[in-house]
Amino acid sequence: MILQNEFVNSFRASSPYIHAHRNKTFVISFGGEAVLAEDFDHHVHDFALLNSLGIRLVLVHGIRPQIDQRLAKLKAPACFHEHLRITDDLALQCVKEAAGLVRVEIEALLSMGLANSPMAGAKIKVASGNFVTAKPLGVIDGVDYCHTGEVRRIDSDAIHQQLDQDNVVLISPIGYSPSGEIFNLSAEQVATAVAIALKAEKLILLTEQSCCNPDSGDHIQQMTTAEAEAFLLHYQEIPDAVRRALKAAIQSCQAEIARVHLIDRTKDGALLLELFTRNGIGTLISSMPYEDLRPAALNDIGGILELIKPLEQQGKLTKRSREKIEMEIADYNVIERDGLVIGCAALHADEQSRSGVIACLAVHPHYQGSARGNRMLDYIYGKARRLALKQLFVLSTQTMHWFIERGFLASDINRLPEPLKNLYNPLRNSRILCKEID
Ligand code: ARG
Image (cartoon, rainbow, N blue to C red; front, side, top):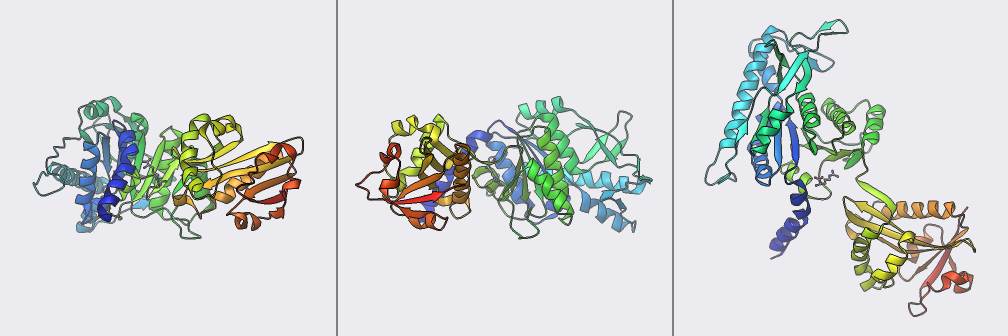
């Protein structure tokens, strides 16, 4: 029974995203390592699921280990400069073989319709083609990159035509020149160029590792483009795969791709968790902050009411009607996380007595414990300073300790300026705390 409820709840919770992602274009890139991995069929089944949910899907695969394998067999060295392969004639031969093989293998998995597999009944059509025009990288720092190239143009019309017909588009890291030359490209670069050319909603980079803070080892849930740039500058030692992915993410966001996701492909189901839950499991890079602390607007009222209802029921907050919040909306501030109000607080100010009352401070139970209350309080202090307030009051029945730990001291009703006294409900018998601010 519990399990059933869990399923029903998480399925319901994913519905805003099922709805939001429908008919959107996602570009997903993954390395040749992912294709070699034993669980690659899980990824392919997840791609199929996305396709059947109406997501316009472009897959870009890498072939690095497959090229290396071939070179090793020929006892030829794999040559790199600045992490980029130098593709001589022999390497180019390996590139062509590897690209062909990997493409065929992915196509085969996408075509598999075994009755007892998750793909049963799914009929996926795959289109590959000459969508990428490339040019030689040339000689850099005196190093001739030979057949290694860079993207020159993406035939976005041709890709859109395929997507319009519900085809999954599969792209190899290879480009052609108008004179028929073949170039070896980096899969991330192709994916980035494709996402930008298609004006995709998302670029999703399935990486070999997750993106963590090297100091704390903590996984990074989200960063703005600016934060990602600072991160790259500050930490020189992050793994190359993550660095490349972050660079691709920054470039894409700057070209107005709304969201770029870095997902550790070694975690089973990570793609689905990232796309269909609010917190995700990967690292989201976006120009706009994913979680925003800002003044409330009228259309936040529904969210605020939802957030405070349980706290009112527990007697932790005074009951407030929709009308009252509506009238005082200018006093309210919210923390919004991807459309959900997860925190709120109001500052009712009396500028004449240079005093304010903090009210209705609440953080969603799923998002407590990670400094959001503190952030909100700091935000309120900032607002109070701008209004030149000198003292802040709180009226509290159950959370005095939280405020006392943050420098509030016991006070009494007589110190509350007249215009703010009506906020005090004698029936609740709240304690009154006060803090002087500079
Ligand atoms: N599922 C949502 C999306 O696809 C949100 C993902 C949030 N991910 C994160 N790492 N913060 O956009």
